[in-house]
Length: 308
Image (cartoon, rainbow, N blue to C red; front, top):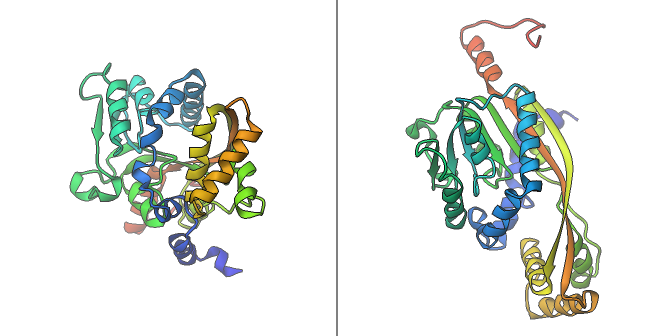
């Protein structure tokens, strides 16, 4: 039972877990930092659609409800994509440093921020993993560090590096349950002979280690779904990508089985896909942590009512 409270064991388990999103991508030969290249344009359109902007607004409103202020704030947006959050951050008066490595997404990001003054949004086209935070001058340099659905987080070491850049707040969002995908549920049994059984997600590692490490934070889990209509050719490609990411064969046999199924099940040539899942959001209050660490180093300790 004491293992539940052993942070070292949790760190080790996360680091060695082969079922994390980043691990599965790499095992399938997919570079996590370039995984959005083929769908950059579609992602950008969805992000800046009315529905996408409403989602962004809900998250920003939640952050404001927790005390985050955007005007004149310095924000590090890691995995900025085409600017789905960098743009509204800048619109609300923040100074944004947007980290993004996908050339396709950077091109769209440059278009989306062209309306701002040149220094309002700075693009850094390097992998965050390769950046020396200390040498770059990023240690506790940002009022808010924002990491939304980005595979840069793959173990506790990566979380600590991110936290080290934040002066006040750090926001992290990750899948809190395996992705729900109607097409996968349909074709998985055809390839494996068994129904699709999703595995646990790394959100549990993150929240538990934040608790064990003594961080102050608020968290929220929501379930979000969307419906899209694609051609059978696009559906076939998406299904094969899923098979690859789950280390299943993507040979001619699998392709033929799925193609035949799609032709029979969707004679119109259009496939309706329902996808989504549960998503976890956590806002970590770094100013509380820094104050606590400062008190410890100076030999001071707080009382029982520090939280009030």
